[in-house]
Length: 216
View 1 (cartoon, rainbow, N blue to C red):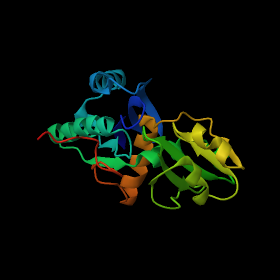
View 2 (cartoon, rainbow, N blue to C red; view 1 turned 90 degrees about the vertical axis):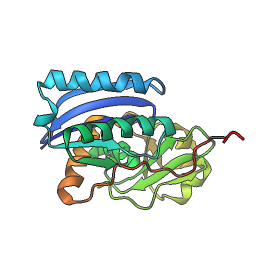
View 3 (cartoon, helix red, strand yellow; view 1 turned 30 degrees about the vertical axis):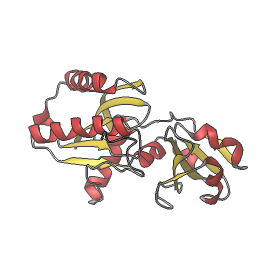
């Protein structure tokens, strides 16, 4: 299976082509802004580098959140456009799962994985997983000091808000992985979920309404 995956849900922008466990081509930039300008050229670059066009793909994948409101809309709009133009199926992947899957198995062993994603407010988006990446509850918007209610025992923290939790959990360590999803891992997760019939719909996962004011 060949998968094109993209991610703009947090503080990075990435695109990758993945085939049966092998990353064919990948681009990733640490950037909280400017993803709308960077994403499409990234996709063009990975496609050209791998020598593929959309007719050679089997699946498209995109992170669905929770994450930055604008970032989610950028990624989802692009992915839906690709799917509409190519006729390819489109699978959604939760952002916390994509972040958790970045943690190396040796670091997950014997520990709960707690993903903390920056919400750009006082709270963070938190979700716990076991060492095999099975969710231990739903993702929730919580203050860092509320994280202790989600986990017990040894914990490995992942995500761009993970450092905020480090001093609040007595048996916690930081993962060595980056704090954002990598489209290469999004593709791998999407392929596994698609094969198992567990894919999420390509719809944004919002935990609160957008911060907008309607003009009178």
